[in-house]
Length: 240
Image (cartoon, rainbow, N blue to C red; front, side, top):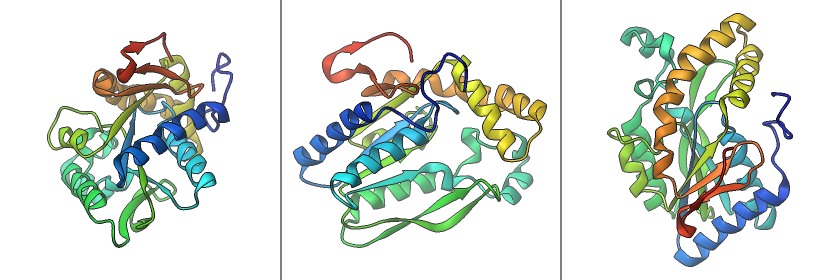
C-alpha cells in the first residue's frame, strides 16, 4: 500500500459498500429476477475486494441472496499455456477461456432452478479448480468480477449484454503498483521479479483495460469505494 492511501486494499469503508449494496438490491427488486453485476478494472485496482465486500453486505442483510463469481477460474491451465507459448503472459486476455466464461454467464442468467457450479482459481497452486463455486438458486444477485468484462473483443464484448449493470473499479498507478508487488511476493516471486511482472505483464494488461472504463455504468474508487461516476446521473468526478 502506498503512503498516500487511507485504506488498505483489504478493506473499504462500510458506508461506501452499503451504498453499492443498496444499489444492487434496488436493481434486483426492480427486475424481479436474478441480476448480474460486473465489476472490472485493471490488475491491483481492488475489484476482488470490492466485489467480495458488496456480496458480504448483501448476505448480511439476506443470507445467501448474493454470490461472487470471479472470471479467474477460466485461466487456461499452465500446461496449455506452455503449449501455446503464453505462460510468460499469464493474465493477458488471450490466456483465458473467454467463450467458456460467456457460456457460464448465460447459464447463470438462465438456469435459476438448480445450482450452477463454476471453477475458481487457486493462487497457491497457480491453477483453476473445477466446480469450487456454487451459484445457488436462492442467489438473486450475482457479482461477476474480472479484468476484461468491458472489453470490445470477441467473445468478451457479449458480457455487457449478459449483465444488468457494469462497475469499473478505478485507482491510480501509484496505488496499484505497490499492491501488485506485494501480491506477487506473497505468492513466491522475489521483489525484483514481482516488480518486473507488475510493470511488464500487469502493466500491459492495464493499458488494455483502462480504456474500457467508458463502457461502465458506474465508476467506483478502488481506494475509498466511493462512486466517482454514474451514467444514470450523467456525472464523473475526479480520480480514484
